[in-house]
Structure formats: C-alpha cells, structure tokens
Image (tube, rainbow, N blue to C red; front, side, top):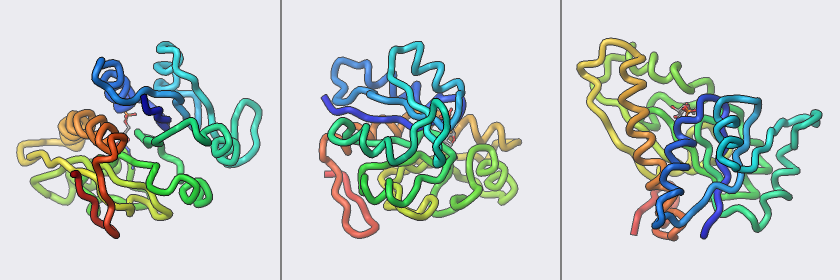
Length: 202
Ligand code: GAR
C-alpha cells in the first residue's frame, strides 16, 4: 500500500474526494498525513477520520513544523505529496528533495489562468471575465515556478451557459474531484512517464 501526504489550506473538498477513493478496497494508496498552513476545515476532516495532521510554517512557530522538519518526517514514509488547495509556495529545497513526487490540482486549464496569485475564486473570476467558453482542471507536477511543472492530466468542461464565476467553480470542482484521485492512482502504479515537459500514461 502506497502512502500519500495531502497538503490543504481550507475547505478540503479535494481531500475528501481523495480520501473517499482511498477507502475503496481496490485502492493502492492511503492518506498518511494531512498538512496545512493553518487550522482549517480540511484539518478538522482529517482529525475526524483519524489521519495524522501537521501544521507547517516557513518560520519556526509553536505547534508548527518547518518544511525542513517535513523532509525528515516524510523520508521513506511518503510516496507522493498532493497539493489539494494548498495556497502557500513550497520552498525550493523541498521541491528538489521530492522531485517528481509533488503534484498539484489547479482549477483551470493550464498554462492559462495560472501563476502567482491565481488560486481559488480568483481563477474562476478571471476565467469568467475573459469570456472563454471552456474551463477545466489540471493536475501537474510541482516545480520551482507557480503552476509550471509538467502537466499530468486535464479535463475540460463547457462553461458557455455559466452566468457567474461561482457557477464555473462548481462545474470545475466536480472535475477536480474526478481527475485528482485517478492521477494519484496512476502515478503510484508507475504508469506515468515524464519526457521533458510532456508526460504520458502507459
Ligand atoms: C480547489 O479548487 C483547488 O483547485 C484550488 O483551491 C481549491 C481548494 O478547494 N487550488 C488552487 O487554486 C491552487 N492554485 P478544496 O479545499 O475544497 O479542495
């Protein structure tokens, strides 16, 4: 059984989707840790479901671990790190340590509507204002730059009938919950190859 750590910052609906799939008898992974940058609903969900939780901060703070501590805690204990609505930038040293072992879900079709400051409803507002007819979700590897690592999978949704960014968010969230657990499963089955910036499922 592979072990994953899920990083969160808020509501935790993607965490719940990943958790629900992990409870299927055919699942090849379980959630070993949930890590957050602050107390939040997602941390409550983890505690209610007996998952180990950690709070992380770049600076040393009471009740928080640092990313350096996480490197030690995770060593040989975690096969994949999943950013599911984690809104803080991951330090470079941590990214290098877990090269091609950190993935992120982004609520738009990258490389559009990504980058610094583009998260949550900001993304959906930008999508709505741009007038595009299609949006979607992207799972990608995390590298040193915001939303720039190799794309693992994407799914699009027709938003031509949406009348607000909130409506877009709901449609996209449904897709996020669908593709994130699939990406996790395939990566952990070693069914993904990375060739420069392109990835391919075997
Ligand atoms: C999700 O829509 C996720 O894609 C987004 O934050 C939301 C978290 O919701 N992440 C980003 O925007 C990262 N750039 P959740 O806590 O209910 O999973």
